Length: 523
Image (tube, rainbow, N blue to C red):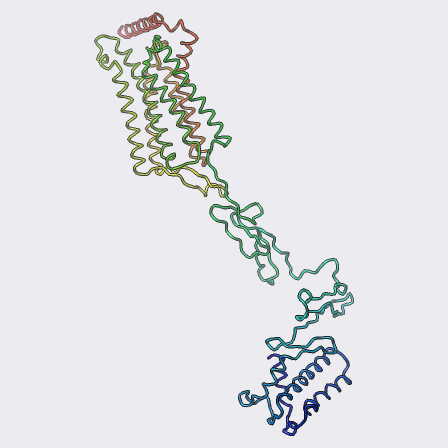
């Protein structure tokens, strides 16, 4: 019930008589006069305090309302009580209009009026309770709140009356939680008692005293302060990366090395050592080694659909071509020495047909595996957010891991066959024979790829790509160095060994040695 309604009910005890209706406008209604006299008596007898001012203000409100009502209503004959219904006595509500417009200042200096809800302005005294050293409680008036005051002056604090000047007392038993922390209420304690716990990784709290932490989006991560989500780092092996730049430089060297040897072989193509080592196969092998080194560049850069499809397939086909050439060269050398007898059945396999068939057949098997792989489960780029929580790794998903291992397994099978055949032909003449060098090259090749498997499986991201590039460059460089560098040494440095007479001497010495062994075996 508002103050205005209370005043209305209290005013219902005032009795207005018909005789008062004849009173002129210069004379006041007796009822209102009694109110005025009561007001005067109150002003004379009561001390000026807050309680008396409130009573006088209420009396004055009713007095002013009565005077204004008298001017409009000359006769009021009914006695209004609290139990009577408003519908039966509508005259009392004529007083409400004037009560709403009452506005004056009482003896305490307070302005009295009613708002649209019929309530007076809210005025509150701020009282501070202090406990002295002796244990006595003390109440001190430290300020005031007045809703009717101008904006910015509603609350007035007397700072000199406060007893805490240097340090404001804390009304809670726990300090506020800073950014990046959340509140955890202590069991059995009031709500103002809580612990501050840092947000988990990937979650933030960007306001103080947060009750819960906010999880960052999938492409973002929390900063060190746990108060802001920042974009995750994007990781892939790029040309701008230091590791990518180093691998690119090494790739350039491994490409230039077989390219230079190819130029040397073309220039000295009519020399005996180049002819004796099947120069057509040497050309194909050198070109395949150049392509093997170049295919490592496909692994550098941001993965795309096309790059992911070409990476493993081109690498597998090029290395299958290289190992097939090595196998063809080894078989050709063995047949060349075993077919020295005119009655040997191996003489029909002499010529470029057999090496070409070996290369085409072995390479086509790898091509078939790659076509099946790309048609069933092709590789595709993906964003890996699980390996590193604060990093998005853009990598190629192989689509089918079994297909990759089939590709590597077939390449290992070709290398093993070449190693066995080259090992069996290791006793052929040194100047003519490549078997020893092929044996060493296949040992390097197999060792590199056997060590590649655990290293490849134990890494992720750009380092996994770097491991595969290193294996490609190491194995291709091993083939170049072990097979072709000794021949380049003879061509460029020991030219006296690159003659037909020298080769014939070696061959004759090998035949004599073989005949002695055969005779000793018979006897």
